[in-house]
Structures are given as structure tokens and as C-alpha cells.
Length: 291
Image 1 (cartoon, helix red, strand yellow):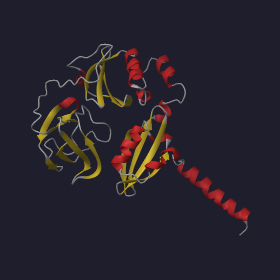
Image 2 (cartoon, one colour; image 1 turned 30 degrees about the vertical axis):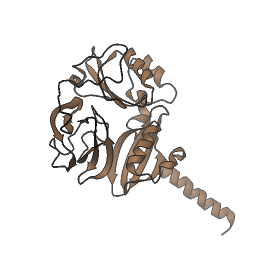
Image 3 (tube, rainbow, N blue to C red; image 1 turned 90 degrees about the horizontal axis):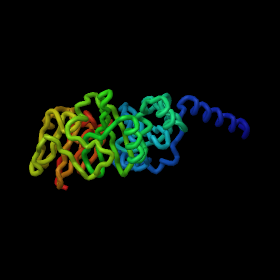
Image 4 (spheres, rainbow, N blue to C red; image 1 turned 45 degrees about the vertical axis):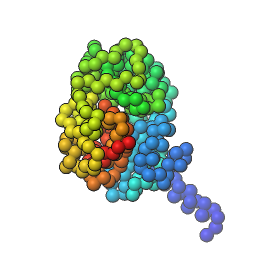
């Protein structure tokens, strides 16, 4: 077979692959390939991405990550707990294609008077703060230090938003179904202290261990767990029912998406007022340890 025919066949298969899958390797993130799931999660977050959704199949676990600053969506495939591939997949992060424009997301948001929550992801905390204030929102509650959970309330329509901030960057902004999560302790001035931790009325004893809650803002059914391992039927609030976690100084908790301490895992060293997408109502086993 001559060279021209070989090149033609190769070109056909390459073109067919692109047309069928419509995805290309995200070369700038290729160092994540081979990483363990927990390490890869930290890597993608450090690169400005936040987890949009997770799908499981016989071929492995597929995660969609969105970078609001770059207006970019990627799909990560994990097999046997390690990253197998990272590809660009612009249409797979929620309503990315329809709700994000690459050059004018700020101006369009201001011009039509509507707030595009996706556009806030990836912004600096100060920029997002100004954007939300311009749309009538005020900070009402906040929790945490290195990972900050901020509840924003808009009085005119009683809407409540949860903004998550890490390393000075917004990782996600979500609309809360219950506006009562934004009410209680008020911190609605134009300035705020990131080191303040408002614990509200849900008291707990630091010496007892880590406390799991069934609702965000440390509300709903709850149970305090001492040092040990707890499977899906020992969590006290139900399997796949945990939404917020109190982690006193000197403790850490490893949370797992599957029972038997399997599946995706993550370690928390401090309070989390509302677990992010992929973890909220997706915890099936935990390990509580002394830090």
C-alpha cells in the first residue's frame, strides 16, 4: 500500500473520531493522567475548575469540570480510582453553551438585569462580591476559613445563594431551594472578615468528634461521630443524606461516595456549611480521625 493511501486512511479515521466524539485531549491538563482521584480533584481545583456532575458506568467514572474564568468544560474519566483521560467537552457542563458567552458574559449579565451564576465561577472573591452586591444581594452568613461558604440573600425576591470560595477564587455559586438558609446571623455590610465563623444556634461539643447534618447550614437531623470508621448504615442521618459537616480543631474526616470506604474520597479539616455538588447527599461511609 503506497504512502498516499496510508495517509488517506489515517486522515479518514482521525476525522471520523473527531466527528463522532467531538472531543480533543485537554493537553494543558495532561499531567493529571495517572493521578489518584483525590489528588486529581485538588489539581483541577487549583487550576480553577469546579465539579459540575458525576456519572458512573461500566467504563468507569466520568466527571464534568467547569472553569468559569476560561469558559471551559472538561470531562475526566477515572478507572480503578485513577485518571485515565482528560478531554475538552464544552457542551457537557450543565447549560454551558446556552448560558455562557466567551467574551461578554459580564456585560450581558448587567445589561439584561439578570445574574448569570455560572459567570461568577472562577472570579476573584472581591469581583464576585461586587457583582452580587450590584444585583441586590447581601452577605448574611459565612462559615469556614480556607474554604469559605458564604450565604447571600436578596430581600426583594427572597432569593438565597451559596457561594464557595477557595484561595481567593469563587469555585461555585448555587441557588438554595430554601431561603431560610440565608436568614439568622447577619453579616450584610459592605465589608466582612473571612476569619469570622458564625456557628448559629446549632451547638456541639468539640470533644465529642465530628458532627454530620442532614441539611446545609448545620441544620436538620444530625449525629456526632467519635474517632472510628462508619459505614452507610452507621452515619446516623441516613445513607446519601449528609449536607453539612462540623469538624472541630484537632479532627479530620475522610468522606467516601460509596459504602465500605470505597469510591471517590475527600478529607475535610474544618467546617463545611454546604457540601459542593458531587458530595452533597452523596456520602455513604466515613472515617473520623485525630488530626
